[in-house]
Image (cartoon, rainbow, N blue to C red; front, side, top):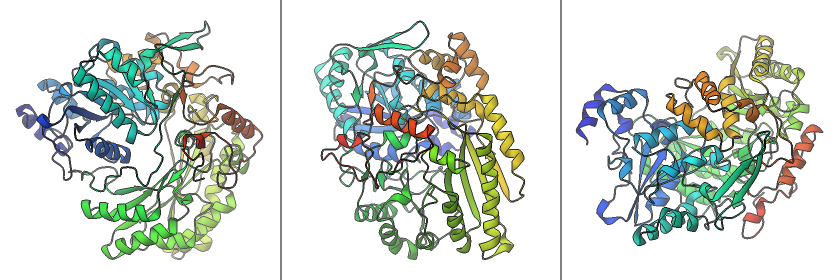
Length: 611
């Protein structure tokens, strides 16, 4: 361990974040590998170590005998200041070596508010921020994750992006980098060849121009780069890598449990949900695969909880069979089994009884809209009857803690829809009074709202976000309408949602503002402790950018979008059709009832998804 680090650690919170040495970490002989890759997560250790995608890719890349993949996370403020004072560069946990010594830095970016932290980690590694200022092939700097479906706000900083699922794509890229390093290729030669790999987007191979009114005019591919970059997917999830010996964190993390991913994609098609579109087509794991992986992982980690993950977990067809198989192992060992946010239209007494065999947790339902008209408009196929029936089942089963999630600012929303949320809370409370087994324990109903953010590759990508003042008016309207003592109301702040919308729909010009925010001290902007709205607004002004142009403007449907060069498999015609359905308040059937012909199934070799 570096002597400077030894002196620093006693002075910071949670020093275990920064020392590595965890059970199941992968350590290789530096002299025996040809490529060293730093897998960088632009957030704290606790967040990154709770991310299943990072765990999967860490083990997938380390399965290559010529690669040693190590981890790096963003330090919290106290550690950041100590490292700066001591002149200690950002380092990888496994070896303690500075990131500047690595052949490649790969960033996993799932949230736009992490952009300034990416820049901060590059700077802490001693590397220039912009790709153009890193003329040599090594170290290669690239990024992937959900935010890569609109890579443009970070395009000047990255040598390339990997778009889609990385289990196979990352390894193909590393094989090419190994060849390029051995043969002494130039960076330009490597990037030109890398652009031939499906799912790899090289920003420097595209020339971007703008109209006088600020809109995007054209994106011109250069040197044989593809006109559109098609995302990569894993064809067979049962055969895909899954780490049954994941790293066991040495300190408390956000999700200290075994996470099992049941399927990718979603059958529902909620019109506001980017993930429901960009993770298509639907592919499921077999229950026997999941049971085996879950038991092996529990045995290799000592975790006391298992959670079943997917965008809509209760839509997994063999869910009861899976729960039975896991509970056969978990129940006698007092290992808990839980599901994340559930759908109110398919929650059953049978499922409830399975979930409470070991321990009982709160129930969370994403309702999203406060009236049936609005829920139909956003294609959230949940009725008031569904929700109240589910609450009755839960209260009869002994639950007394229910969380309901909604969005404010959705397209076509009215004040009547907002007041409907308060009325729904009253209905749930009345349901508890009618059906609760033990009323002496009381009930806790939590209503949470977030501000709608228009996201690329969703039917609402053209919509305007409501201005912050209007969002806060709607928050106050709802807050004044909630009067029951047993109902708690939480809401997401307007300022962060506004900046998120700017970054979500930004083009390459927004990169200048991201860098300006960083230069003014911005980092860890996903945390309220560090986020400064004024710093962002000052940066936009300094760069001559109007953030409302990106966040609060309805985009014409015939406009060229910054993310149009990324093909996630879903046809734009399908998104436009779904948007039209919204304004007619019409539901679209879910994928299992009727194929909507979105186009994503074409990414599969058989041309048919599990929907």
